[in-house]
Image (cartoon, rainbow, N blue to C red; front, side):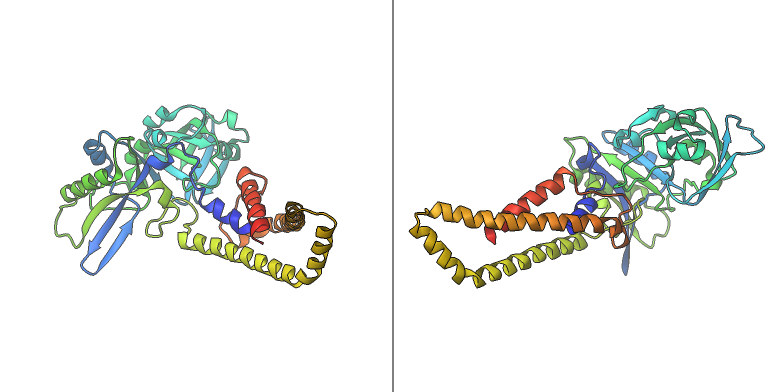
Length: 370
């Protein structure tokens, strides 16, 4: 049960996005004479060039800043005595409205269009509570970012689930970062690539990823043909379904999980069940001589074959259900400690339809095969 919970959680990352199977990450590969390197980001000016070359595709960006300082100014943008100061290790981003055409978030206040404006920022409900005590009073108030930019809170987002590689907290308009290039390292140099600046595409239903990858290869030859290059740089698509598992590329989340690890955990769980079934069969075999006398007496007294079969299955079912109940009790006690061995900080529980279905299938299979 614990292994199933871990595997289920890790494979659920960002699957709540409605267009999950049509979202792709534009990544970068650099081929050197003796090595290949991978980067999840692209050069800053490549965003506009991609939009120009791929007008049929919705393209959005997310630009991360780590360890930024946020000063709460309140309703007075020129407040000389700021109320609170925070250091945001993660969750501090710049983006444009197109990002929210690709990824679906619920807006409690405002809309994606506010991110077209300079010095406009959006907070999640949790961050708004952290800064102002009540998220409802946050819109219209002011923040100062990195002691350099004063921004106005123009919208509030509903908190995102924990199983996401996009942990939004404070999101400011991309034009604000462009206008303060020295503060955030924004540059129009095509040779500069940072993993903090990542681009995502939502492909139309009639457009294949293979076709877009071919076009991106041509795009790369055209735009990365500068100076004396030591590598051949190419952009390509990485499905959203692979972002949480591909160790070649960093994501904005707190960890990457190998699919090989999840397969290993699944096989360990399977072997545990098989060993339990074998032990049960051995115990049943050891009792076979005594049970054969009982079966013989029942036959003499008029029992039918189906009645005997039902009795054996019924006894097995009672044992399996008892084992499930005991296992569930132990697993519930262990569940709070699972975060110490797996990268899961969210509170988990077994009372959901996936786990219930898993347990039901487990009961039937073990009952029949054992």
